[in-house]
Length: 85
Image (tube, one colour):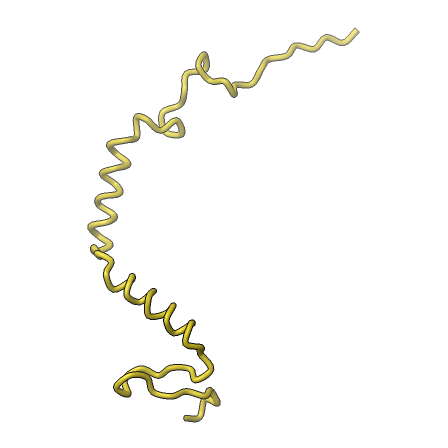
């Protein structure tokens, strides 16, 4: 191994594991990999279509798309008139 990293083979000789990794770190990695393996995955095209459908269905409730009427907006600019003497 010409990379200079100290590696050994993991279980059944399949996965290279850094020999300086502690047992605690390895356990955390295994737990994280178990979590990731158990996730239900969907295709990006399906997720994008679902997101577009959700956005279309909730667009009327979004104040950035459908502005709040000025009379109901608590953050509207107050008009000040200044007169110079």
